[in-house]
Amino acid sequence: MRVRFAPSPTGYLHIGGVRTALFNWLFARHYGGQFILRIEDTDEKRFVAGADDDIMASLRWVGITWDEGPDNGGPHAPYVQSQRSDQGIYKTYFDQLLAAGQAYMSFTTEAELAQMRVDAEAKGLKSFRFRGAERDWPLERQRELAATGKPYTIRLKTPLEGATRFHDLVRGANEIVVQHDQLQDIVLIKASGMPVYHFAHLIDDHLMGITHVLRAEEWVPSTPYHVLLYKILDWELPVFAHLPVILRQDGKGKLSKRKDDVATNRFWERGYLHEAMANYLALQGWSYDDKTEIMTLDELVERFTIDRVQASGARWNPDKLRDMNGLYIRKLPAGEVAERMLPFLAKAGLVADPPTDDELTYVHTLTPLVHERLEELGQAPELLDFFFKELRPGADGYDPALLIPKKLDAAQTLVMLRAVHGALNAQTDWSVGALEVSLRALSEQLAVKVGPLFGAVRVAVSGRTVAPPLFEMLAALGRERSLSRVAVAAAALE
RNA sequence: GCCCCCAUAGUCUAGCGGCCUAGGACGUCACCCUUUCAAGGUGAAGAUCGCGGGUUCGAAUCCCGCUGGGGGUACCA
Image (cartoon, rainbow, N blue to C red; front, side, top):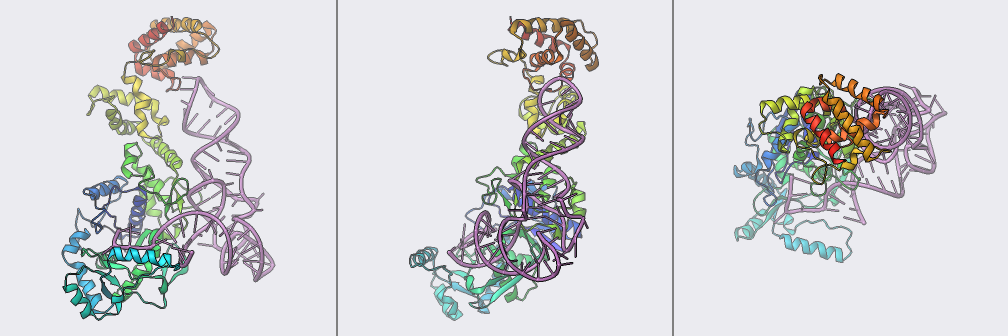
């Protein structure tokens, strides 16, 4: 079994593309087949230089590797269509089609065609299906006109009557039937000489021995053209499996690069784990059973079968992805989380890049404080910044009003914080346990509940009301900084 | 408009004729734990299985129609 993922380098790869690639890859790995990566750069207008590298980086990120591709080559190289076009690979076949009278040179220009559509609509015609007059010309006449230098495209001569039918693995036993009067003579070769997707992908799939075509659902309507071409060329049809589209969060249409934040690289920039992304993506249109959701890449490979792919569209659900990411972060050993957080801390300027040895060990001691609080690694800087930066109450820091617990006033809080400072100052054992014993005793001594007391201290040392556990924070902050922060906080209330 | 595909809670899904008083997950809410926030635990609300006809002793499961949603309709992929 051989499958392929064939992206167009028109920009970054969006997450739906990764899903399609993942399904192909899982399919190949599960059945012991090969997965091929092919770059379909036949659209000169939308071509973006460097997009292929970005696409490959995105695929590698989720763990997808290819047996043959543009970078690692293979028996069917090259794996880039513009290069294949330059080699004349496609010409062989359209010459064959032309000679057999199955395709023809069409001299109608894009502008003329657009006008024809407008006219048809004005006349109230239900639908416009273009078939060029040249489809009935002898090939010689087509060639003569072409020889005068008039630009032309090569179009498929689609049958006028009958129907084309094909099966789809995802849609089950029912055949998809399309009447030929619904088709039109699609362009196979553009006036520029570059083949169009419908033609190039099919030639390459055949030449590369692709046995199963797993692609997104939006290709269903054009599949009849492909089936027709396979038959004309007398080639064996691949097995089709059209994967459900990923719908936008609001359900209004499919995910789009322009409207949605779905560039794959955006996810690693925000601190999504590739393991979580692969797991979530696998569940967009596929499921294992009625309970299992959390699966490693290896487990996915072992369990992935095409019969469990859903036919209906799946809506993009960032909340669930986020939840799953948090779960994966929690599953990671703390040391691993520390390592993965580092780039985010460095980018925020909290540690050097690369970090010093001291910074490295400090990040490791800090990690347990935020480990289970992270849903995205990118949250690490905002959660931890007060451990790295000066902290001051006032205009350029936190609001001193936060120090004052509910039902207490500034004077009472001041007394409390001074007492805390005294107690901590007398503290010789700066361990989490000892600090807790000390402040709990103080709570009793002052006849203040631990809630308000700890709350005030929390703000004093972190500048915020929501933070990691207090004694862990004090311990990580160290004696000097803790004492000075409490003192400064108290002073702010004087 | 026309063609094609799809249809179980707000969302992702399990279900492939009797095991379903419809299971799981996200989200939501409550309670427990608790120094805040999380995490974790327990529980709840939430689906007349889109609607209407059939087939069958029996249908979420099969068939038809309708409706709704999505996709396509390019010298883009």
